[in-house]
Image (tube, rainbow, N blue to C red; front, side, top):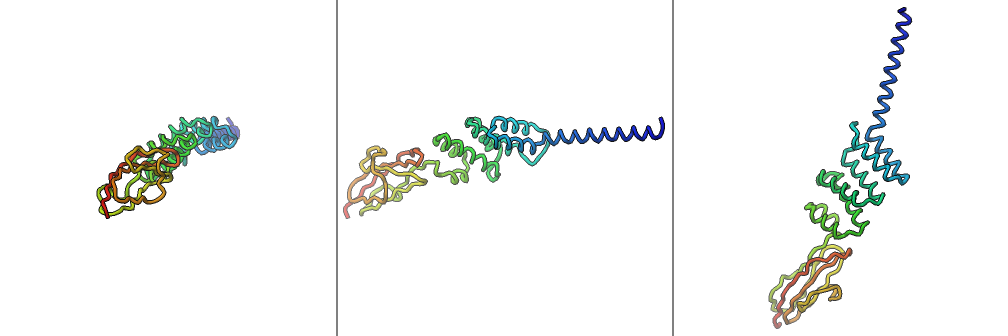
Length: 230
């Protein structure tokens, strides 16, 4: 083999190796989380949410490291599933992210936002209240307190008072308090609390409950008051 032929052969082998490396890099890049997530976003913009979800699944299976964490990808899938109308699956995914993260992480907060979005879209306010209460995380309950329901509280404790009492019934969140003064069970047709109640000499058994703006009712609280003569 002549020197020129040998050089040409080596050059050809080098070119082939370079081409193989280049195409290998292209395949690797095409399978990266960033690229797949980008393709999923593009599909979602076209309304192809099922395709977007499949691309996220591929990104989750990708062995190529990237800037997207599993939790971030799961949240994108939950978003696409919700937009596709599969709210049960979307909620399940969001709850998984809550379980796998913790308070203080952005993904934890984003997962709760997705859960609230899904439940309010479905008008499943009872389920949402149960999930929030069950979270045991005060920051979450505080942020979404309007979806919870709290028992009303009598500012002055039940008991005997020697003069007329101006009684306040306190409640949390947006909603209304209904009450009775004679011990009967209150309903939404009972007295609507709109300000302090003046208790003059007599005996009262006050029962009250709170109903939030989403129709969830609290427990009924009871307070017995005896007001003696001035």
